[in-house]
Length: 72
Length: 250
Image 1 (cartoon, rainbow over the protein chains, first blue to last red):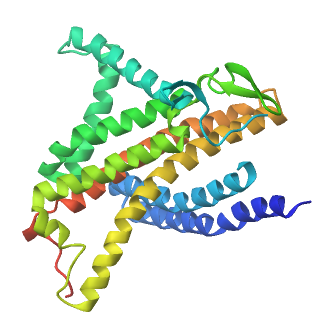
Image 2 (cartoon, rainbow over the protein chains, first blue to last red):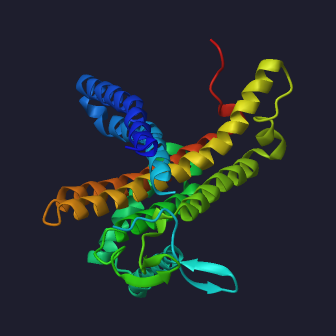
Image 3 (cartoon, each protein chain N blue to C red):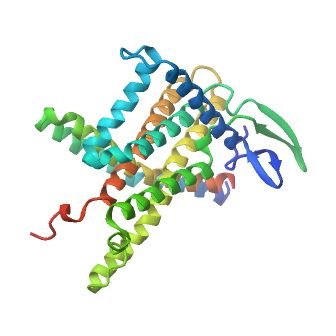
């Protein structure tokens, strides 16, 4: 097994830990907020999707680095 | 299994490569010109199917722009909706059969290389960087138009005290980070989705791709929505009139 393969695996593996936890926290808070105030569901949902896209972008950066290492 | 990060040139116009993704951009534009002309010919007061679908999208974004940016949202509506429609069409077109699989074999120095003739426009980093530059450029333009150049640039170059100076530097860096973040978010999602579908189809040729197509369908929509929504939010922040700012401190 070459170091390059190891690098690809580690890049995306470690890079997805943070955003995974982040998205989980966001989802939890959003669900809590909806539970407290079901009337505001659509507003909360829209803002949650926005925030999830921000954190998911970090995971996507890690994925792009892994793809670049593998294919370039 | 051929996966290429960069788009493959189909032909050259005077040393400028016309890649398969540029051809796809033209395809998207062509499709929307046709749809626009079809609807424009006869606009009913009680809409039929195609006009109904387009009205759903247009009114949804009209309400979104009004709710996020208030009265200023009317000015931002065309750009935001156009970005959404372009990115959405590009992303979804990438999932049709034939995209990535319909192509020619080209003889290279060390063997054969497969050149797909059709490849989704947003799976090329060039397209997404171009869209990001348009977004951030529009943010700067509308900011200068709303606040005047002195007030707009005083957000970034603030010499009143050292802390404000560093905040200004960070804001400036953050503007460039927006370009990178916009482009890589969209590119990463679409390209990784493409690679995922290729790999799954390669591993299990029958039926296993179905849930992943569902995922890519959803992701394509979400990324288009997020791109448009973030453009709208940053436009709103850049054009807040001077008196309406939030109070600092207590």
